[in-house]
Length: 365
Image (cartoon, rainbow, N blue to C red; front, top):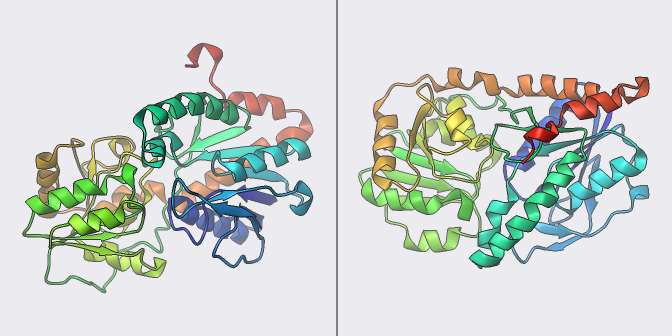
């Protein structure tokens, strides 16, 4: 099968979407499929079956770009379109599927409305954008033959297929190498932006001055946080991927106060490396973090956050067993099955298939 991944988030930017696309592509091609990635161009040299779209810098969110336009005639013949976002390249993929009459799948990675407050700096304008944006995205998602989501935290008027993006359990596992053998270290890895609430981690580090905190990542909020951080907080740039298992294995607990995740891939990667997670008691962590792999704290309650980190440090864990269900092997088996199902149009079952993914009218809104 020739599959097109249409995404507005790709290398050189590093985030969960980028790596999900990379891993899914590798696994699908290992199974004999051809996967093309259509993405905004930037400071990245495309490889085989990677197709850049001309783009300009994004003035509202640094690190990402605004794609312009790509003629459909410049794209390969595809059997299926898989869109990974509602921005211009994702819309290009939906348009391609409509014009070429091929099935289209959408994977919900990010609740974009949560980025509006930090992008436009006006609460009133951000609220207005949200009210306008959500109905539009609901309409867009309703046009796809299937919508997948990692957890129930999608909050859209569709009935999604639950499909966690998946962890490479062979790659993420405890390592013999340890970076902090004589220190107690609490770590975080991910984007440093408003919805990730890394400021909460920096604040709780002041209360837990006997421990060291290592924050790995980049983003628009890093500079100000790094300037104000106490002495026991160290900031590092994004690590090369091959070093992540060592980092996760070396820290004593992983902490996140994010309210903008749909799965929290880095938390589960840390679990796969044997490290417990302290997470805010908000979705998706209400589904993914529990007594087997960590503990949750009340969001905004820094006393509770500090106590939860202490609990993670004082308890014996078998966190790897708790996240086996999120193995990428299971994910790709389900994804290929979904691909086969939505391409049944040739025998007249296609219309029935598309309807089955949508909510009945009485359940909408």
